[in-house]
Length: 152
Image 1 (cartoon, rainbow, N blue to C red):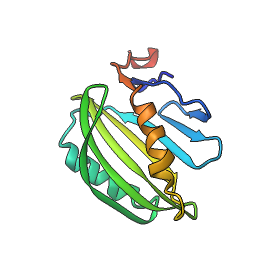
Image 2 (cartoon, rainbow, N blue to C red):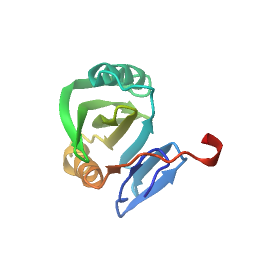
Image 3 (cartoon, rainbow, N blue to C red):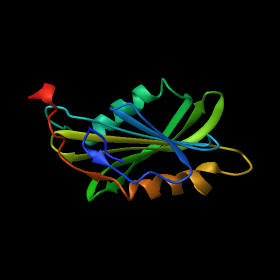
Image 4 (cartoon, helix red, strand yellow):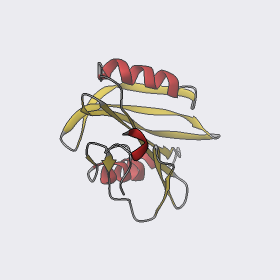
């Protein structure tokens, strides 16, 4: 699956795919796992630690009871970025997951968000969500987006 935003990946079997051009979302057939990718092209990429902190502050408005752990290194297509484990309530369901940010170049930021229902009897993130996210993350690669005819 190619994106106009400078990344591509292999979709996961058993997941529905929605592409609105700037954001791509994969959702498991049962609706228990949601994975979203998008990128931006700032004039210059700054400190990933500060960018991820700001993004998580904004994301805290999406999830009720939002919490996140400290940052860990996370590598996609040879580019090391940062990841944070997250949890909260999304659409009245308790969820856990991960937010990842990677800078494939000094003018591209890539974001990935993975959420999985968090059942107290079975940790959906640890048993299925993390595996689905890692499976698709291993297929992601980055490229320089080509300008469109309107951008020339």
